[in-house]
Image (cartoon, rainbow, N blue to C red; front, side, top):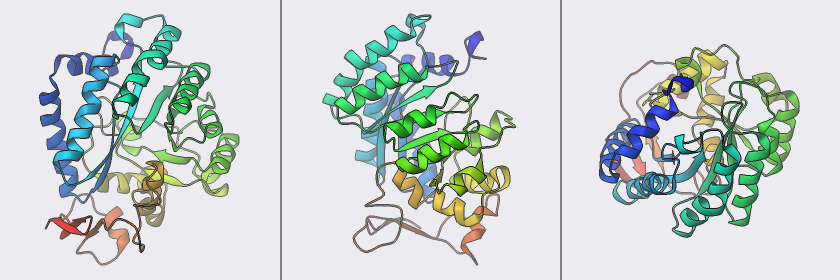
Length: 311
């Protein structure tokens, strides 16, 4: 698909053609759907602009969402998502452009909370990703990584060496990768929506993650190419059915471990004295019901910072 100009490249063309206001209006609709389902914190990743002006445009939309809607928004710069058409065959030059021009400018404007990259044969090598991580560290920004989705490049071990907040996908990670992530405290973010939509067959190594005590989060990976899923509750079900997670693991994956993956573990993700009062009230018999039903009633109450935002 990518070789034929589809996938990420198709979305890049559409993103570049859209105005900031158009992107904001589109994103606002999706975010409001997530909020109705009980979501109070999201991460927005860029990565469909792939040049300074359009990455800035995406990250500005993320900041506007936080300003205009009652939810927390973390903005992650994913400029190293794919090669833009003007850099085809010049991956090293593009990484240099991100490090020397894009990332410093975006960070100086206060638009970036974390830096991500796609470490894969069809994207960027571990050596190229490491250059980006070094620059992020210089700028005082935490890192994350898309790793081991399609093959094993030990990107998750690289992420662990740089104390990454999280590594995503991980279908092809090894036991050694799991050990490294556990030691670093890097959260494994599993993405069952993409696994399902792409008809993948390689399961993440759940036994290794459990054996070594890696924190496991679940996310929607909401994007137009590989995971058009607007329901976090559906991801709970998919985490259990596709990845054999327990309901308890899945629920921790969208609350306390998800907060840790965003760098918010000290303030969000669990009901504790001193943390932000974000919580959702459901009319269910047991918590596991949230991971059981395909669909179902909306929450009875959604509370953000101690104030009800819907019912």
